[in-house]
Length: 359
Image 1 (cartoon, rainbow, N blue to C red):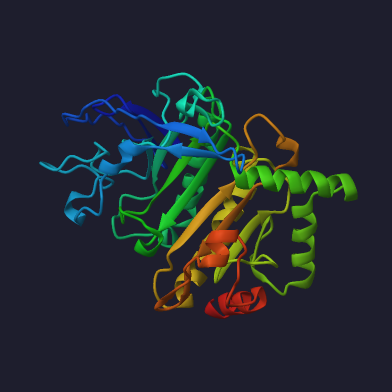
Image 2 (image 1 turned 180 degrees about the vertical axis):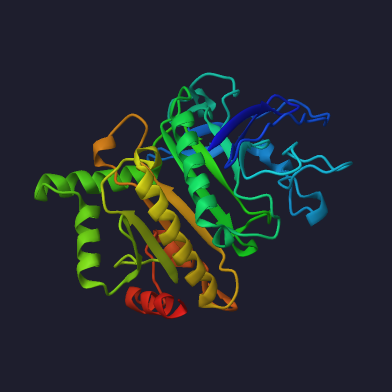
Protein backbone atom coordinates (compact mmCIF):
# COMPACT_ATOMS: atom_id res chain seq x y z
CA UNK A 1 0.00 0.00 0.00
CA UNK A 2 1.24 3.48 -0.89
CA UNK A 3 0.38 6.34 1.46
CA UNK A 4 0.44 10.01 0.37
CA UNK A 5 -0.44 12.97 2.60
CA UNK A 6 -1.64 16.25 1.06
CA UNK A 7 -3.61 19.32 2.19
CA UNK A 8 -6.95 20.71 1.05
CA UNK A 9 -7.53 24.40 0.37
CA UNK A 10 -8.59 25.13 3.95
CA UNK A 11 -5.65 23.26 5.46
CA UNK A 12 -7.41 19.99 6.24
CA UNK A 13 -5.37 16.82 5.84
CA UNK A 14 -6.16 14.33 3.06
CA UNK A 15 -4.45 10.93 2.83
CA UNK A 16 -4.43 8.70 -0.26
CA UNK A 17 -4.07 4.93 0.19
CA UNK A 18 -3.14 3.45 -3.18
CA UNK A 19 -2.70 -0.18 -4.12
CA UNK A 20 -0.07 0.70 -6.74
CA UNK A 21 2.55 3.49 -6.72
CA UNK A 22 0.96 6.77 -7.83
CA UNK A 23 2.10 10.36 -7.69
CA UNK A 24 -0.49 12.53 -5.97
CA UNK A 25 0.12 16.17 -6.90
CA UNK A 26 -3.35 17.60 -7.64
CA UNK A 27 -4.05 20.90 -5.87
CA UNK A 28 -7.37 21.85 -4.28
CA UNK A 29 -8.29 25.06 -6.13
CA UNK A 30 -11.47 25.86 -4.19
CA UNK A 31 -11.84 29.07 -2.19
CA UNK A 32 -12.77 27.60 1.17
CA UNK A 33 -13.12 29.34 4.54
CA UNK A 34 -11.23 27.86 7.46
CA UNK A 35 -13.14 25.18 9.35
CA UNK A 36 -14.82 26.80 12.36
CA UNK A 37 -15.90 24.00 14.69
CA UNK A 38 -17.49 25.00 17.99
CA UNK A 39 -18.05 21.62 19.63
CA UNK A 40 -18.71 21.32 23.33
CA UNK A 41 -19.25 18.27 25.52
CA UNK A 42 -21.45 18.24 28.62
CA UNK A 43 -21.57 15.53 31.28
CA UNK A 44 -25.15 14.53 32.07
CA UNK A 45 -25.33 14.34 35.89
CA UNK A 46 -28.28 11.92 35.70
CA UNK A 47 -26.60 9.29 33.50
CA UNK A 48 -22.90 10.03 33.90
CA UNK A 49 -22.58 10.14 30.09
CA UNK A 50 -20.99 12.80 27.92
CA UNK A 51 -23.19 14.49 25.30
CA UNK A 52 -21.71 16.45 22.38
CA UNK A 53 -23.08 19.80 21.18
CA UNK A 54 -22.11 20.62 17.58
CA UNK A 55 -24.53 23.27 16.33
CA UNK A 56 -22.20 24.27 13.47
CA UNK A 57 -23.10 20.99 11.70
CA UNK A 58 -26.55 22.32 10.77
CA UNK A 59 -25.10 23.69 7.51
CA UNK A 60 -23.40 20.47 6.36
CA UNK A 61 -23.96 19.12 2.85
CA UNK A 62 -27.34 17.39 2.46
CA UNK A 63 -28.24 14.99 -0.38
CA UNK A 64 -26.49 16.74 -3.28
CA UNK A 65 -27.19 15.53 -6.86
CA UNK A 66 -24.81 12.84 -8.10
CA UNK A 67 -22.96 15.22 -10.43
CA UNK A 68 -22.13 17.47 -7.45
CA UNK A 69 -21.13 14.71 -5.04
CA UNK A 70 -18.30 16.04 -2.82
CA UNK A 71 -16.83 12.53 -2.42
CA UNK A 72 -16.36 11.80 -6.11
CA UNK A 73 -13.02 12.65 -7.77
CA UNK A 74 -12.67 16.22 -9.02
CA UNK A 75 -13.52 16.92 -12.66
CA UNK A 76 -12.93 20.00 -14.82
CA UNK A 77 -15.21 22.72 -13.50
CA UNK A 78 -16.46 20.53 -10.65
CA UNK A 79 -13.90 20.39 -7.84
CA UNK A 80 -14.73 18.12 -4.90
CA UNK A 81 -13.23 17.18 -1.54
CA UNK A 82 -10.81 14.92 -3.44
CA UNK A 83 -8.64 16.99 -5.83
CA UNK A 84 -7.39 13.97 -7.79
CA UNK A 85 -9.21 12.63 -10.87
CA UNK A 86 -9.29 9.09 -9.43
CA UNK A 87 -8.39 7.24 -6.24
CA UNK A 88 -8.44 3.85 -4.52
CA UNK A 89 -9.12 4.68 -0.85
CA UNK A 90 -8.90 8.18 0.56
CA UNK A 91 -9.29 9.66 4.06
CA UNK A 92 -9.69 13.34 4.88
CA UNK A 93 -10.67 15.52 7.81
CA UNK A 94 -14.40 16.17 7.96
CA UNK A 95 -15.34 19.70 6.92
CA UNK A 96 -18.22 19.62 9.44
CA UNK A 97 -16.71 17.72 12.39
CA UNK A 98 -18.53 16.72 15.55
CA UNK A 99 -15.16 16.93 17.34
CA UNK A 100 -12.12 18.96 16.28
CA UNK A 101 -8.52 19.52 17.32
CA UNK A 102 -9.05 23.23 16.77
CA UNK A 103 -11.83 23.81 19.31
CA UNK A 104 -10.87 26.44 21.86
CA UNK A 105 -11.98 27.04 25.41
CA UNK A 106 -11.45 25.56 28.86
CA UNK A 107 -13.36 23.09 31.05
CA UNK A 108 -16.16 24.63 33.08
CA UNK A 109 -19.78 23.99 33.95
CA UNK A 110 -23.23 24.97 32.68
CA UNK A 111 -24.21 28.37 34.10
CA UNK A 112 -21.09 28.21 36.26
CA UNK A 113 -22.94 26.18 38.89
CA UNK A 114 -20.66 23.13 38.86
CA UNK A 115 -23.52 20.65 38.47
CA UNK A 116 -23.05 19.92 34.75
CA UNK A 117 -19.37 19.83 33.74
CA UNK A 118 -18.47 21.10 30.27
CA UNK A 119 -15.35 20.89 28.13
CA UNK A 120 -14.28 21.72 24.57
CA UNK A 121 -15.21 18.96 22.13
CA UNK A 122 -11.60 18.30 21.19
CA UNK A 123 -11.06 15.25 19.02
CA UNK A 124 -11.00 14.50 15.33
CA UNK A 125 -13.49 13.33 12.70
CA UNK A 126 -12.47 11.88 9.35
CA UNK A 127 -14.26 10.66 6.21
CA UNK A 128 -13.17 7.40 4.54
CA UNK A 129 -14.06 6.91 0.87
CA UNK A 130 -13.91 3.22 -0.06
CA UNK A 131 -13.94 3.69 -3.84
CA UNK A 132 -14.16 6.45 -6.44
CA UNK A 133 -17.19 4.66 -7.99
CA UNK A 134 -20.20 6.72 -6.92
CA UNK A 135 -22.61 3.86 -7.66
CA UNK A 136 -20.60 1.18 -5.90
CA UNK A 137 -20.92 -0.26 -2.40
CA UNK A 138 -18.73 -1.97 0.15
CA UNK A 139 -20.29 -5.31 -0.80
CA UNK A 140 -19.09 -4.83 -4.39
CA UNK A 141 -15.46 -4.18 -3.44
CA UNK A 142 -12.83 -6.76 -4.29
CA UNK A 143 -11.11 -8.59 -1.41
CA UNK A 144 -7.96 -6.65 -2.29
CA UNK A 145 -9.75 -3.34 -1.96
CA UNK A 146 -11.28 -4.36 1.37
CA UNK A 147 -7.76 -5.18 2.55
CA UNK A 148 -6.71 -1.65 1.57
CA UNK A 149 -9.62 -0.24 3.56
CA UNK A 150 -8.62 -2.35 6.58
CA UNK A 151 -5.07 -1.05 6.30
CA UNK A 152 -6.42 2.51 6.11
CA UNK A 153 -8.55 1.91 9.22
CA UNK A 154 -5.47 0.59 11.02
CA UNK A 155 -3.39 3.58 9.92
CA UNK A 156 -5.99 6.07 11.07
CA UNK A 157 -6.64 4.26 14.35
CA UNK A 158 -2.96 4.65 15.14
CA UNK A 159 -2.99 8.26 13.92
CA UNK A 160 -6.02 9.34 15.92
CA UNK A 161 -4.83 7.44 18.99
CA UNK A 162 -1.83 9.76 19.01
CA UNK A 163 -3.99 12.91 18.90
CA UNK A 164 -3.90 14.77 22.21
CA UNK A 165 -7.06 14.14 24.20
CA UNK A 166 -8.50 11.32 22.07
CA UNK A 167 -9.61 8.43 24.31
CA UNK A 168 -11.35 6.12 21.83
CA UNK A 169 -11.25 5.63 18.04
CA UNK A 170 -14.44 4.55 16.29
CA UNK A 171 -14.47 3.61 12.56
CA UNK A 172 -17.97 3.03 11.17
CA UNK A 173 -20.09 2.99 8.03
CA UNK A 174 -23.68 4.16 7.68
CA UNK A 175 -25.46 3.03 4.50
CA UNK A 176 -28.92 3.87 3.20
CA UNK A 177 -31.33 6.77 3.45
CA UNK A 178 -33.33 4.87 6.06
CA UNK A 179 -30.28 5.08 8.32
CA UNK A 180 -30.02 8.84 7.73
CA UNK A 181 -27.21 8.90 5.17
CA UNK A 182 -27.05 12.25 3.34
CA UNK A 183 -24.22 11.38 0.91
CA UNK A 184 -24.84 8.25 -1.14
CA UNK A 185 -21.22 7.77 -2.25
CA UNK A 186 -19.74 4.63 -0.59
CA UNK A 187 -17.97 5.98 2.47
CA UNK A 188 -17.57 5.68 6.21
CA UNK A 189 -16.28 7.84 9.02
CA UNK A 190 -13.82 7.67 11.90
CA UNK A 191 -14.40 9.49 15.17
CA UNK A 192 -11.69 10.24 17.69
CA UNK A 193 -13.72 10.76 20.88
CA UNK A 194 -12.43 12.85 23.83
CA UNK A 195 -13.94 10.26 26.20
CA UNK A 196 -14.65 6.52 26.38
CA UNK A 197 -18.13 6.00 24.93
CA UNK A 198 -20.98 4.78 27.15
CA UNK A 199 -21.38 1.51 25.24
CA UNK A 200 -17.70 0.68 25.49
CA UNK A 201 -17.54 1.65 29.14
CA UNK A 202 -20.43 -0.70 29.93
CA UNK A 203 -18.92 -3.54 27.87
CA UNK A 204 -15.62 -3.17 29.75
CA UNK A 205 -17.44 -3.34 33.09
CA UNK A 206 -19.14 -6.57 32.01
CA UNK A 207 -15.86 -8.02 30.70
CA UNK A 208 -14.08 -7.18 33.95
CA UNK A 209 -16.77 -8.77 36.11
CA UNK A 210 -16.84 -11.91 33.94
CA UNK A 211 -13.05 -12.22 34.01
CA UNK A 212 -13.00 -11.81 37.78
CA UNK A 213 -15.49 -14.66 38.12
CA UNK A 214 -14.36 -17.04 35.36
CA UNK A 215 -10.79 -16.04 34.54
CA UNK A 216 -11.64 -15.69 30.85
CA UNK A 217 -13.01 -13.10 28.43
CA UNK A 218 -16.77 -13.14 27.99
CA UNK A 219 -16.60 -12.55 24.22
CA UNK A 220 -14.12 -15.40 23.87
CA UNK A 221 -16.53 -17.76 25.60
CA UNK A 222 -19.47 -16.50 23.50
CA UNK A 223 -17.41 -17.02 20.33
CA UNK A 224 -16.44 -20.54 21.41
CA UNK A 225 -20.07 -21.43 22.15
CA UNK A 226 -21.32 -20.03 18.83
CA UNK A 227 -18.70 -21.95 16.85
CA UNK A 228 -19.50 -25.12 18.78
CA UNK A 229 -23.27 -25.07 18.21
CA UNK A 230 -23.30 -23.32 14.82
CA UNK A 231 -26.96 -22.40 15.29
CA UNK A 232 -26.37 -18.70 14.65
CA UNK A 233 -23.15 -18.78 12.57
CA UNK A 234 -23.45 -17.01 9.20
CA UNK A 235 -19.94 -17.29 7.79
CA UNK A 236 -16.59 -18.52 9.02
CA UNK A 237 -12.98 -18.24 7.92
CA UNK A 238 -9.66 -19.35 9.30
CA UNK A 239 -9.41 -16.32 11.60
CA UNK A 240 -12.93 -14.81 11.82
CA UNK A 241 -16.46 -15.99 12.57
CA UNK A 242 -19.65 -14.07 11.78
CA UNK A 243 -22.73 -14.91 13.84
CA UNK A 244 -26.02 -13.45 14.99
CA UNK A 245 -25.60 -12.55 18.68
CA UNK A 246 -27.65 -14.86 20.93
CA UNK A 247 -29.56 -11.86 22.32
CA UNK A 248 -29.85 -9.93 19.04
CA UNK A 249 -31.66 -6.60 19.29
CA UNK A 250 -32.15 -5.78 15.60
CA UNK A 251 -34.05 -7.54 12.77
CA UNK A 252 -30.67 -8.01 11.07
CA UNK A 253 -27.79 -8.21 13.53
CA UNK A 254 -24.37 -9.78 13.00
CA UNK A 255 -21.09 -9.79 14.92
CA UNK A 256 -17.77 -10.46 13.16
CA UNK A 257 -15.23 -11.59 15.74
CA UNK A 258 -11.56 -12.54 15.29
CA UNK A 259 -10.58 -15.87 16.85
CA UNK A 260 -7.64 -14.20 18.60
CA UNK A 261 -8.13 -11.50 21.24
CA UNK A 262 -6.70 -8.23 19.96
CA UNK A 263 -7.55 -4.72 21.22
CA UNK A 264 -7.88 -2.94 17.88
CA UNK A 265 -7.46 -3.08 14.10
CA UNK A 266 -3.71 -2.22 14.08
CA UNK A 267 -3.08 -5.37 16.14
CA UNK A 268 -4.42 -7.65 13.37
CA UNK A 269 -1.73 -9.48 11.42
CA UNK A 270 -1.75 -9.82 7.61
CA UNK A 271 -3.56 -13.17 7.46
CA UNK A 272 -6.29 -11.90 9.79
CA UNK A 273 -6.80 -8.79 7.67
CA UNK A 274 -7.07 -10.86 4.48
CA UNK A 275 -9.47 -13.33 6.08
CA UNK A 276 -11.66 -10.52 7.37
CA UNK A 277 -12.10 -9.27 3.81
CA UNK A 278 -13.42 -12.65 2.66
CA UNK A 279 -15.76 -13.21 5.60
CA UNK A 280 -17.13 -9.65 5.63
CA UNK A 281 -17.87 -9.65 1.90
CA UNK A 282 -19.73 -12.94 2.36
CA UNK A 283 -21.85 -11.37 5.13
CA UNK A 284 -22.57 -8.18 3.17
CA UNK A 285 -23.64 -10.07 0.06
CA UNK A 286 -26.00 -12.19 2.14
CA UNK A 287 -27.41 -9.02 3.68
CA UNK A 288 -28.10 -7.52 0.24
CA UNK A 289 -29.70 -10.79 -0.93
CA UNK A 290 -31.96 -10.98 2.13
CA UNK A 291 -34.63 -8.67 0.71
CA UNK A 292 -33.25 -8.52 -2.84
CA UNK A 293 -32.20 -4.90 -2.33
CA UNK A 294 -29.31 -3.00 -0.77
CA UNK A 295 -29.69 -3.37 2.96
CA UNK A 296 -29.49 -0.14 4.96
CA UNK A 297 -27.12 -0.77 7.85
CA UNK A 298 -24.66 0.54 10.39
CA UNK A 299 -21.33 -1.27 10.62
CA UNK A 300 -19.54 -0.29 13.83
CA UNK A 301 -16.03 -1.27 14.92
CA UNK A 302 -15.70 -1.92 18.64
CA UNK A 303 -12.10 -1.17 19.65
CA UNK A 304 -10.42 -0.93 23.05
CA UNK A 305 -9.93 2.58 24.46
CA UNK A 306 -6.65 4.30 23.67
CA UNK A 307 -5.26 4.46 27.20
CA UNK A 308 -7.32 2.45 29.68
CA UNK A 309 -8.52 -1.16 30.03
CA UNK A 310 -6.94 -2.30 26.78
CA UNK A 311 -6.42 -5.77 28.23
CA UNK A 312 -10.22 -6.10 28.49
CA UNK A 313 -10.87 -5.19 24.85
CA UNK A 314 -11.65 -7.75 22.14
CA UNK A 315 -11.96 -6.18 18.72
CA UNK A 316 -15.14 -6.95 16.79
CA UNK A 317 -17.39 -5.47 14.12
CA UNK A 318 -21.12 -5.12 14.75
CA UNK A 319 -23.47 -4.80 11.77
CA UNK A 320 -27.17 -4.14 12.22
CA UNK A 321 -30.13 -2.92 10.20
CA UNK A 322 -33.50 -1.38 11.00
CA UNK A 323 -35.12 -3.05 7.95
CA UNK A 324 -37.36 -5.86 9.25
CA UNK A 325 -39.05 -6.61 5.92
CA UNK A 326 -38.49 -5.42 2.32
CA UNK A 327 -40.77 -2.42 2.92
CA UNK A 328 -40.96 -2.19 6.73
CA UNK A 329 -38.68 -0.48 9.23
CA UNK A 330 -38.18 -1.23 12.88
CA UNK A 331 -38.77 2.02 14.71
CA UNK A 332 -37.49 2.45 18.23
CA UNK A 333 -40.73 2.57 20.18
CA UNK A 334 -41.43 3.42 23.80
CA UNK A 335 -39.62 0.47 25.36
CA UNK A 336 -36.47 0.88 23.26
CA UNK A 337 -36.26 4.68 23.26
CA UNK A 338 -37.67 5.30 26.71
CA UNK A 339 -36.15 2.44 28.75
CA UNK A 340 -33.46 0.96 26.42
CA UNK A 341 -35.22 -2.42 26.59
CA UNK A 342 -35.17 -3.95 23.12
CA UNK A 343 -37.99 -6.12 21.80
CA UNK A 344 -37.08 -8.03 18.64
CA UNK A 345 -39.70 -9.26 16.16
CA UNK A 346 -37.53 -12.23 15.19
CA UNK A 347 -35.43 -14.70 17.16
CA UNK A 348 -31.66 -14.78 16.61
CA UNK A 349 -32.03 -18.29 15.19
CA UNK A 350 -34.58 -17.09 12.63
CA UNK A 351 -32.33 -14.19 11.63
CA UNK A 352 -29.38 -16.53 11.18
CA UNK A 353 -31.37 -19.00 9.11
CA UNK A 354 -32.61 -16.23 6.80
CA UNK A 355 -29.07 -14.95 6.24
CA UNK A 356 -27.73 -18.44 5.60
CA UNK A 357 -30.53 -19.07 3.10
CA UNK A 358 -29.83 -15.76 1.39
CA UNK A 359 -26.38 -17.06 0.49
